[in-house]
Image (cartoon, rainbow, N blue to C red; front, side):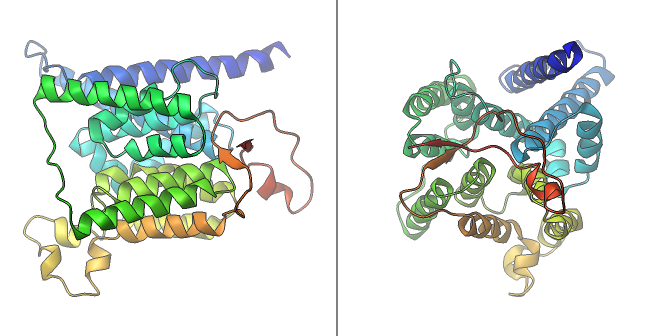
Length: 330
């Protein structure tokens, strides 16, 4: 009994340590690389940091899907995830996306009464703006305190980015694309609010965030890791295998490879193959919409898993025992 009580605390402590290391790697964006280090040192730090971040993302994804997350499983799944196109591209480009996704997932899984809930989400949104859709999701689902905390940290981080790095993003001009982005955001948030499970609510908001600012940028599609975990947890093994095959195919290299044709020069039937991630985002929204609930039902909110009863025996036990618990706010 003592070991059973200590193990969850130990895993929580290790997760907290991994998050601290993630924040240290995130702060490296604002700090210059030491020039006095020997040549192998930055490479070693970069590889170790990214490995820890990928392990943390895998653990958070498993917990979101309702799976237990022992470290042997986390390590194996993270090693397999290295071959996924969005993961490998993010690692090559610096790994900042891993930090942002980990911050968002960790913050959304915290208890509703936790001090500073929303702070990490706001920091992630202030750096990349893509996670800002999650702030709207917190507000429309009644978690005003967390949403306002995220909004405050988003504002502070954005100002820090502007004044420290001098990086001011270009404001989009009002027009057809702006209206399309606003409509996509509204539709995605509506689908997420009606989702019947916390996992699909989070995935719907993530798909919305990916579709609006930069739908064709593969480095931001790290949400494929929790998507695979959720599909596998719900027993959709064929869909998970098809998605993994799709992410291993790297079809977007038809247009992105050096010397290859641009997307506009490809045939109409080749363009979806060379830029497949918008279709994936729409598919996630469609799946989340199918799992919607009637108007007036309680709003599903993501949070820490409650104690789960023993999985029922029989042929349905494998599918129902690994799903995450649901919390509702009226």
